[in-house]
Length: 313
Image (spheres, rainbow, N blue to C red):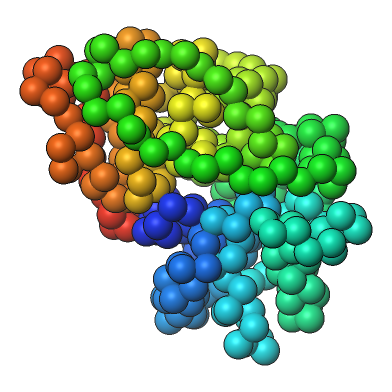
């Protein structure tokens, strides 16, 4: 059985997965922003209450909204329950130069993990696997060249979508512009396989990288769920990606409004789409009357608020 919680990490990501068979394996993907620090500590306390550990903590990439939530926990606890960490973006002097964005924080995080003697593996590239009883995590991206580019050039974080367009979904202007962030391109793309189920986690990766990875490793694969990249950003979700992903259930992790063009692309390319959201950002004056008639009542798009409730698969 798989139990999964999409934690309410505001604009960031933190996903807690429990794989239950003869023993429980806890996998945590990302740790949210600094404003989620209490949330991460609560997550750890719940795992400790079960007398379990975090078997694997995966940082999909090094942006603040994916790494900073666990720093206070590491600073205040001499002993941790984190068994192993996967991370990209350490080992280069560029991370020690004190940039305003994520680069300086990754250095602090890596230093803390070393102080706590947490087993840390880097780089994490396509083909990497983590096996446990009855399941595995298979990494299908990034490639070596993409990851190394992050160590050469750190760009400022691209702001998440603001959802400024408020008209009908069907009238939205659809001009796809790919995400150019090097850190996002280097996101770990991984598939959890357990009990004949597959869940795709995409971090903040680009549509192009995800398509290439799925084509290579899961060309005919059907996923139970797919966590959409970059909090549902229009720059990371292309029509081609929507057509490629073989599932009807998609996770969006954000407390910010998703641009309507993303829903338009889903509505155009798929007959049925269920969006599982950890915040109900669409509840206030998001859908027009036409949207409701054309997309919601017809169930072409189903919006489901899950908060951080447990998803059982």
